[in-house]
Image 1 (cartoon, rainbow, N blue to C red):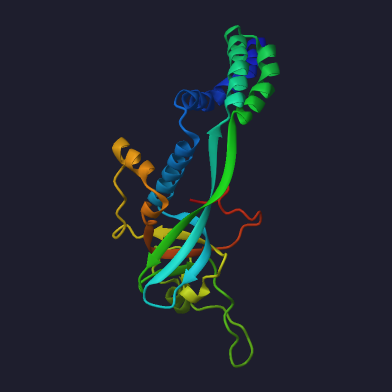
Image 2 (image 1 turned 90 degrees about the horizontal axis):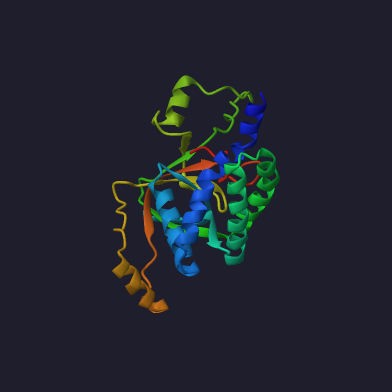
Length: 251
């Protein structure tokens, strides 16, 4: 029984191991903060675009013509190493590991809150919005999560939709939600963005030589922003906590 309790007290280390390993690697591979931030942004963008869909907030809508243009933003948290914070973290980590190796459960429990605090202080965290420019043709599909109540009949009675009406409103059974129109998209509303895989061609991975050339570019030489082709936008309701990008958001 005592042995089990001692092992339980040492469990925090197993919980932290992946994060600790990642931080050790970050400390060894520290880069220029600007370069690291840019690289993190590029990786996060690639991760979002590679997913089946990603959530965004509609900040601009231009859907008058056959070519429809949209802008969505996605919140992004970037971490850069805090040199002093990382130094303190490493000092606490050494004491924590030493206690773990000694199987000193009481000491491990005592140091654990300090290690957690040092872990959080090892990085500066900045928050920003990543902007995605989207373009679609006249075949863009728009979906909505719910149907409005059916209009009352001539007698003033509101009746439920018939099976035939529901099938027509559903459209393709494999698509989420119900058919909608571009006019139902709202400024500052939330959507799930579906990249058109047939049209989107990811840029090739940049080599070290490409990155060096990019650093030499002036503001006027910068590459044009990427415009992502899309084939569907699915309207999603604003969540109660105001954050559709949180841990409970469905992917």
